[in-house]
Image (tube, rainbow, N blue to C red; front, side):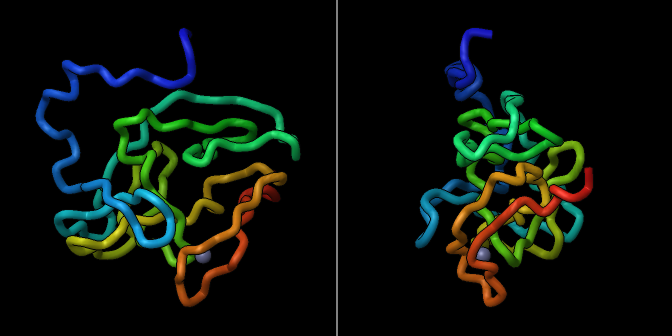
Length: 152
Ligand SMILES: [Zn+2]
């Protein structure tokens, strides 16, 4: 493997947009985010996360990449630069989830213009990890931590 960050393939970029129902736009609180430009029904597959797999031991000195998703104990995926999964922000009141095949799946109807968000704590297993939350949801937990730590 040459390096962790993939290089965007120009020939691929010229092809038809593989995610025509999605757009990446700035958000008011959390940088770029993934937005629906068409309606998704509950259970719809919104996108599939594809990227480099990273393994590491849990260590308080070690900083998780801000766009990594936990995919198991000591394992993450760092989505490719052109993958929609790279831009999905956290919400304590999410409208989507990530399933075992790394598909982002709608939990409820997501309307055009809505930001697609998942709950990061549902996939992260690193007990050392936490993140201040600025999601703005009514039930915001303030700090997000791994929710799966005690399953192993
Ligand atoms: Zn929150």
